Image (cartoon, rainbow, N blue to C red; front, side, top):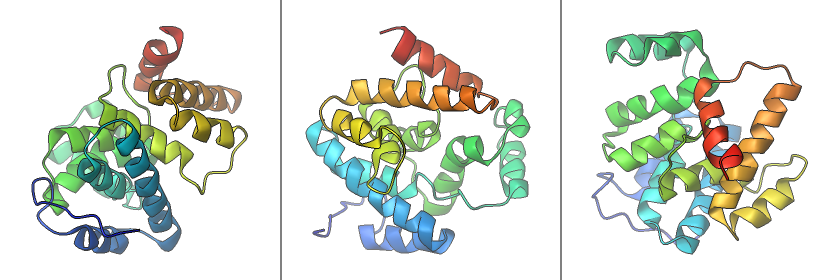
Length: 198
């Protein structure tokens, strides 16, 4: 891939410098996933007239804190007075919502839209910007994903972003319910807005 140029508005360094910082924070498998998500996010950004630079930065950092300890997440929730209910959840929720705070602190990325896209990439939100939708969907359809209907999800993503958000939301909730998993309340609100409300 041709080196994407950053202009210093959202991250002070180059794309390569950001990649180096992310690589230090993640194991090999997770890091390779992040690069595939960026590839999908850039493609979706081009198709949906969204800043490629923002899509690249949000994609590269969406899982930045995924491998941090539970204690670090809990300390961050308390230190920054985040919603106390977060303490009742785990890494799947934390690495998005709390991870956005860690990205802001450590990488000095402060753009609200990028941070919201990181925060919302796991369970979405009733209202999502195009960038939110792109990171949410790119994480779901990146080329390494191999689940039933992955190819349908990919085809949908590159044809109709909103339809892909709806498909992903429904697919994820069906999986959680069939596995008798606890569902984060925001995921239900996302479902009501993007699936039931359509």
